[in-house]
Image 1 (cartoon, rainbow, N blue to C red):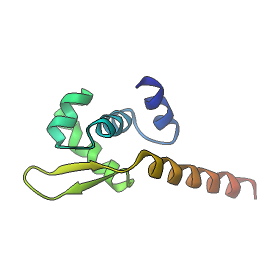
Image 2: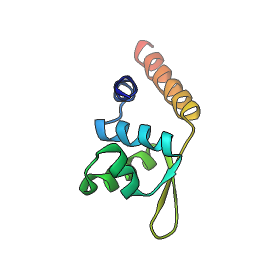
Image 3: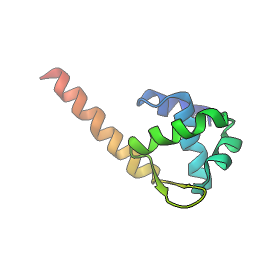
Length: 94
């Protein structure tokens, strides 16, 4: 998991975002409390972390009580991030 965290931090995620996303990839779908417990992210932080991951399009939120967080495919997410980084590189050299 440590290498995966470093990879995700390298493409712009925070430590907590990387931990939450990796945890959710193993759970596929979970509540904030479940993600918090499995990832060791404090409950006081998990909701902001999950909101940020949703804004970055790394997961989807399913309405209900409690909310359920569904992971987006790592292949889809990493492909999109690769394209974004390639555009940034091209923009910086032109």
